[in-house]
Image 1 (cartoon, rainbow, N blue to C red):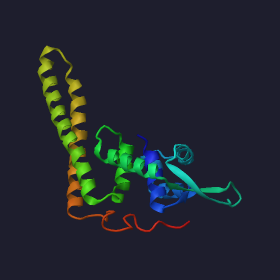
Image 2: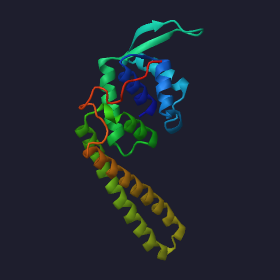
Image 3: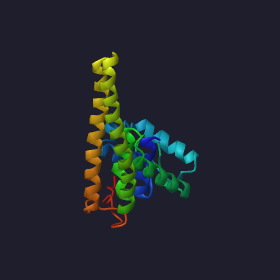
Image 4: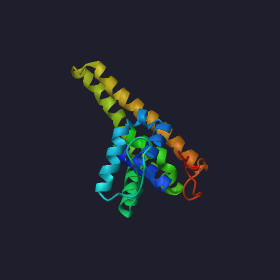
Amino acid sequence: MSATRLLVLGVVRMYGRAHGYQVRRELLSWSADKWANVQPGSIYHALKKMTAEDLLEQVDVEPGEGGPDRIAYRLTGEGEQEYQVLLSKALSDPELNHPDLSAGISLMTSFPRARVINLLRHRLVHLEAEQRQAKLMLDEVKASMELGTPAHVGELYRLWGGITDASLSWLQGLIARLEAGEYVMSDESDDAFGTPPSW
């Protein structure tokens, strides 16, 4: 999965129609260039590629101010389906990397509250299993040290366990905050993201 693909679809969806410059400005205001490595070239590439895949359609061309024309895009029906699938996967799949989860969290308010909580609970079940696995493996390393396994190998499992513990703690907190009504979700307001700025 590509965090850039999900973020570009999400921003175009948020605006209803948007050109590359708007998408770029919005994502830079979220610092997505730092946490998802979203670069200007990848944004424009994603817009063109998803247009070729019929996920986006061109709806307008504005003359550029001293530069190339600006093409405005909107999601097609297939683009909306792709967005729904990618966002669901980003929130629920523990195998995805940090940028994908970050993209999912940044767009989660575009889904209804109950759906987001259910997707995050799916992730939680997998993380709990991963935590148990890390503890078992650490115990196995301790037992195998008597057979000559270097003691420092256990640090790998302590690292894995620590990362999993921190992820679990954060995820449990996020679910609790959502259950308590924090954040405005799509089933509560049309402006779950607030009003997009006009550039």
